[in-house]
Picture 1 (cartoon, helix red, strand yellow):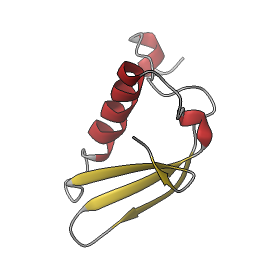
Picture 2 (cartoon, rainbow, N blue to C red):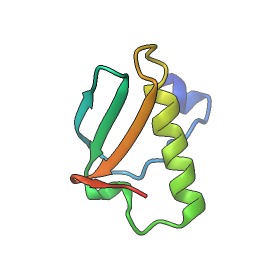
Picture 3 (cartoon, rainbow, N blue to C red):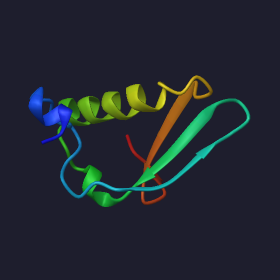
Length: 77
């Protein structure tokens, strides 16, 4: 059992979600491209929770100032 499971933390990302690629430009913008499991048809509140989790995780790295999320190359809105 992981520490996260022991603390009863759960991920907002659905099972099967995979990071396909990530690039960080000179200005500190990370573009993270995920597979379709991230959910392009999720309810707005669900998308907001997923977006927040991804952004908080990536911004733990001091060089990352902004985050752009894409799903299979398309901007995830």
